[in-house]
Amino acid sequence: MMALFLCCLTVTSVCADASSWAYATLNKLSLDEKIGQLLIPAVSFTQSKNSMFSESEIIEFIQKYHIGGCILLDPAEPQKYADLLHHLQQANRNIKNSIPLLMILDAEWGASMRIAGLDEIRIPFNLTLGAIQDNKLIYQAGKEVARQLKILGVHLNCAPVVDVNCNPNNPIINRRSFGQNPYHVAKKANYFLHGLQDAGIIACAKHFPGHGDTTTDSHVTLPVINHSIEQLQRTELIPFKEIINNGVMGVMSGHLLVPVLDTQHTASTSAYMLKNILRNDYAFEGLIITDGLDMQGILTHYSPAQAACKALCAGNDLLLIPIDIPNTIRAIKDAIERGKLSMEEIDQHVLRILQAKEWANQQCKEYSSTVMQKLLTNEAQELSKTLYAHAITLVKNENNLLPLSDKKKTAIIICGTDTETVFAEKMQAHADILYADTLTSFDIQEYDTVVFALYGVQYQKPPLYNMTNNTISLIHETAKQQTDVALILFGNPYALAHFKSVPTVLVAYEEHAYAQEAGANVMLGNLISNGQLPISV
Image 1 (cartoon, helix red, strand yellow):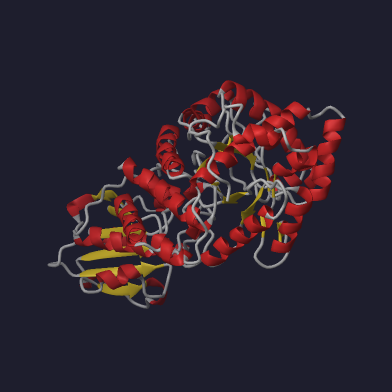
Image 2 (tube, rainbow, N blue to C red):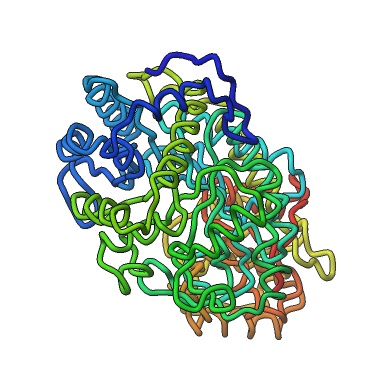
């Protein structure tokens, strides 16, 4: 573990003290060691697969190439995560003059995004958080995510997403965005980032300059943002500018083509976007990190080594998930020899990385062999429940149907699943529970009130979002015959466009047990809905 240093860093900027550990360390490094610091490969728990390397291969990269850190993508139990990161740090410490590794996790909604067994302390999706009106809770969510990651030995979280999801057909951002209003997104993201960084985890805003208005996924192809400068300035760029002004320590460049800014290069390989806009116009001094270099949004145009080298030349500091380490190093050295990269630029990149490591290692916790016990606290569970409860949104309540009256006979029709749900369990003492998939006959005249509980409504697959035409027709036909009809949606709120005729609508955003419990409590009058839709339908 790196000792504490005399230089004290803030979350708003990296250390500028020329006597700091970061400066002293930079001056001792060889070219090979400097290049190694730029590389953040992905590690797998078992064996090499796709773009990930085994633990033994990562240790070899540490010894041979002096890599700067690694990112974990595999699902696994939390103790395995902590053990693996601990083993890699130990292997790194055994090397003479070693520099601590920077451990990265993509944990937008907390450790449960990657790690099994943590559903009880899960942080809701950003879109769910975007419905919450008490921003202090967003800050607490960021702090809780930081607490979880520090227990595991992680230093940097690839979050928050600050993309403005203004396209209901977006296949990859959707629930990962705080909403469709850029100022709303900026405000929520700022609270979340301060929660992360105040608790000792580096935040990284993504995906610059904005992945929200796309109908394609940069993991599988190259999205194109055909916006004017004016559109970008009043939508996509606002959250990035705001979050940089509020001290975010990292920004991730996206594999996105924005012709009005650069007709030839993705944002991740565009010197104009990274150097002119991020560094010069926005005065960003923190880390610029590539999106995964294993993604087809960049590999459809370059070889793995070319992609990494072009991203570095464009201004990125950290090269995330390079999949050809030896050839990437050769390409970087060749770029230096040909004058495409200067040693001054290399030093600037490495200095920012070392400064981030210096700050991060002053925050980190000691390794623990009781990770699950430390993660699953009562306070974390209560926060998760509170977040879901504050997000629940009563979109409309015509005829004041909610809360339901015990004096009226109610049918609850579960759509999209044939298994027993938490919502049904909470409501069974107050209503007849029916399942649409097995419903052979239904006499609407038997009931005063009909409530449809909609499951399986995905955030992808527009325009039906995985709903069936039969389900949509059933809800519409019932609404025509019965005035007291309600819909509770445990999924994508964009699906509400199909249910404009339903007079009472409640949105819970997710199928998590806490969301279902909150939905039942609003239905029964035990909870007041305070959430607001973060998107328009």
